[in-house]
Length: 94
Image 1: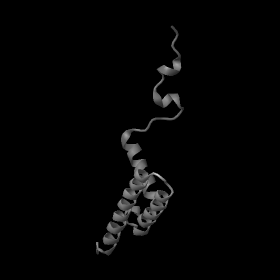
Image 2: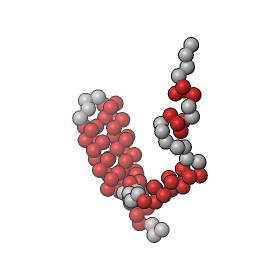
Image 3: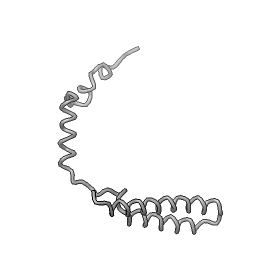
Image 4: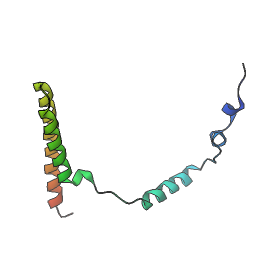
């Protein structure tokens, strides 16, 4: 049985790049994260969750099966609860 030399190479040699020590890799990851613009928190955006609830209700209305409609309405109720929660977070002076 023949074995290729490729399988015997270290992972850093297989792809032609040098492996970074764990600390250096972590430092690079932190630097990249700091350079990226931060997006707003969708969990705190009440209008986002309210729009999800409305879309889910419209999707529920498209289905004939009552069990399917009920399932989608439960999901919509969860989105509405998230919207209420986001509104209450928006009122709290952090």
